Image 1: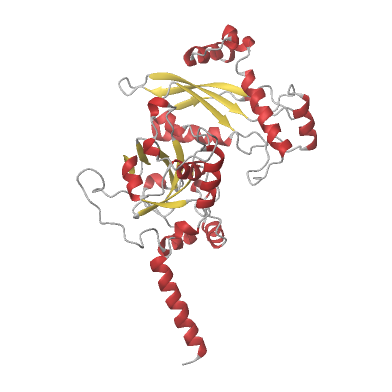
Image 2: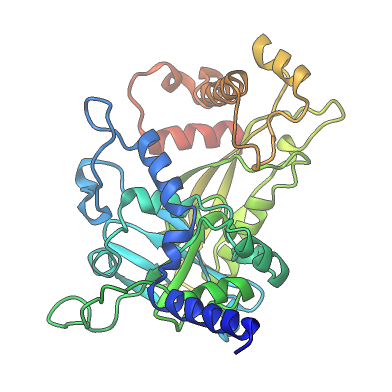
Length: 377
C-alpha cells in the first residue's frame, strides 16, 4: 500500500478518535479566563481565592440579586423571532437559567448537567467577548477564522432535558460526555441552533450591552446603567439597541433626551448622565402606562475633571474610549479610568442636583431618583 494511503488511514483514525474523546469546551480559552476572573474578584475573608461557589448557592436575602447576562447564539435557527438577531438574551440567576427562546429551568437543573457551571464560570461567560459566534455580529467568515485560531471564550452548555429534576432521570453522563467535534464544526460554520443538546453561550454584549434587558422584563421602577463601551463618536449604540429590543419584545418605550451627552466642538459633553423615563405598558388597561426611571451614565469628559485626568487625556487622546481589544492597562491608564468613574459618581450626589440628600450618609433609592428627576427632567 502506498505511503499516502497509510497517511490517510492514520488521519482518519485520529479524526475518529478525536470525535469520540475531544471535549471542545476544554480546548477554549474559557478555563483560563474563568480562573483569572475568579482570582481577581471571588475572594474569601482573608483575601485568598474563594473555593468554587455554585450560582444556586447564592442567597439573595443576604446580598444583591445577581442577574448575569449572556447571549444564546443560534445563527442556524429557523425561528422567525431570531431572523436578523441570530441570538437571544440568555440570563443566569440563582433561581433559574434560560431565555425566551428555550425557556427557563431551575438553576440546579443546569448545574446538574454542567458540573463546572459555577459563579466564576457564569462571570466568564457574561464577559466572553471574543467568540466565533457573536450574537448580532455573527458572520460565517469571521466564525471560520476565529475558530481556526481558537479565539473562543464562549462555551457549549448542556441543556436540561424535560426529565431532569424532580422525579425524572436522564441517562447518566458517560466518561466521554461533553460537546464533541460536531459542535466545533458548528462553530466553524456558525450553524448553532436552539434544538441541539448543547447550546452555545457567549458575552451578553453580543446582543444587549447595557445589561438592562432583563431588568425591563422584570419591570423595575428604578434602573441605573453605566455605558462604558467603546464609543468615541458618542453614537449611543448600546442605548438605542436597548430601545429597539425593549419596544419589539415588551412594548416598553424608553424616552431619552441625549443632547447634553453629545460631543461639542471642543470634544467635551455638557454632562456625564441623563435621566430617562421608562413607559411600561399596563396589561390591564390598554393604552395606559406605568412609569419607571433609568439613570444613564456615559463615559465622557466635560472639561471640569481634575488635572490628572486632563493631563492623561493630553497624552492619550483616545481616553476615555480605548478599544476593547486593549486588555493590558498600564497603572496610569487604570487610575485614569478609576478617577473618571469616581468623578462621575460624585456628580450624581451633588447637593445642587439632589439637595440635602447629597450630604446624607443614608440613601433612599426612590427619593434619590425623584430628586434627580426634579433637577434633570
